[in-house]
Image (cartoon, helix red, strand yellow):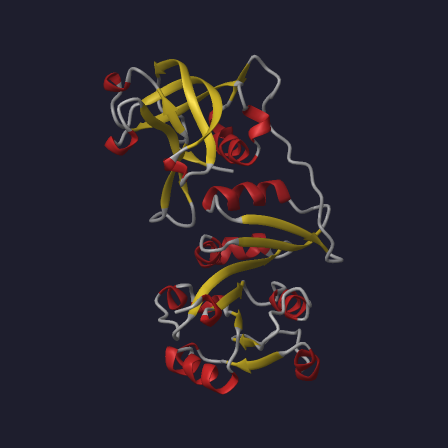
Length: 316
């Protein structure tokens, strides 16, 4: 199939009143988003904000509504394709439907999932995380972009960003103020970047992990010291292992291991699961373990066996 017959699908998800409609409306009426053909907008949830069909039509958009999860099927999408002949698809998705529906969806011929954007209202985010954390994390871990809107001076944006980047390192995380403009905030760090050895306390491992991935300029050529658990794998070769920590991304059954590649000449002396105090210089290299992208590689200066942290699970 030629590229001209490919039909990109853009999914905007999030909970009710998270700003999906406003964001979607601004996107599909932006001349830069239009490809010159018909954009099919599929709305799966009705909130306080509404669409003006006449206004949408002026920008080459057609809107349909799917109110029930059971109706969101390949057969229905093929019907829309035949009826409207869209050149791109935007889906305002119902966050309560869960992501398995999209994961298992067999799209009509030519359709492909191009981008997932997850919206979050900063004012209600903590409440949702207390009550429906697993649902939101399931949306966000699939996202290419996560947008926190309606941010105020009370928004703990740095904490939100670290949590999202730890859970989904490939996601772009953005923040908007109440007026829709970019929301600026200071990302404070609990350790001294100018120290001869940057000491990472146990409680701060998650903060360091995210910052080291996002800001090479903070760590290139510098020495860090932290406590990590040994992960060894034959695919890493005979001189590399990963010292890291476990993090609960959404629930007790969803635990990930966070860490960066570490070079050592004493790999045979290390036991898998062993806790070490790692002192290493940080360099940034393109590595297959990072899918060919540049990422932190630790070159050991000292490895010392140590006790496990009082709290083994990472927090942000």
